[in-house]
Amino acid sequence: MDQLPKSRTEPDGSAVIRVLSYNIRSLRDDEEALARVIRACEPDLVLVQEAPRFFRWRKHAARLAAKCDLVVLGGGATAAGPLLLCSLRVFVERTEDVLLPRTPGLHRRGFATAVVRIGGVRMGLASLHLSLRAEERRAHTELLLDRLAAMDVPYAIAAGDVNEGPEGPAYGRLAAELQDCRAVAPWGGGPTFPAAAPERRIDAVFATKGVEVLACGVPAGLPGISTTDLRSATDHLPVLAALRLAAAP
Image (cartoon, rainbow, N blue to C red):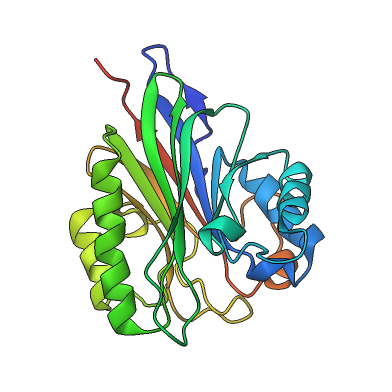
């Protein structure tokens, strides 16, 4: 596996960052394996899906963050599952948990969003977990794009479990408006689900057009990450992206 660029702030204030997207299935699997995978990725930002939503969910989120040498940025049960974690390199301007219109009989969906700064760069974030129903996925995709546009930031990054592959209409809509980072700069593995025998690429990192995508993919083979841990941590594989964002002139 080619070496993945390390996080750094450049002399002009530009930032190279690592962004990880990970569906953690409510911490129902091997939490120690999950923490080892996240630590090995050395992320600045982790956009989580299926974070614990019920009894003592804040305690569970804080425990996972501490095991990964990160802190909780926002989201969790108040966003219906999406969660944001970050390193101490990140300066937080604001966070907002967004609950989406509910379809009777279906699980409530939401976005965990934030505006942050790293070095001289300001960016918006959104962790997403789209519906199992195609019509609702497409509707929520439009709401996500509206939310990113309203953040009034130079750059935006959205990541999560799309619940369909690049051939699907919701995924295609996101890829038409944003960069599908894996498609732009493939690195590591591609398919993300199911973790034990991945066949489908349904988890992704997306970025607005001004972001330079250096590499993106499943970090299988990254030092410190074993196949056993990837299979034991949860039912999805993570997606790791290295991105470069230029500082404002």
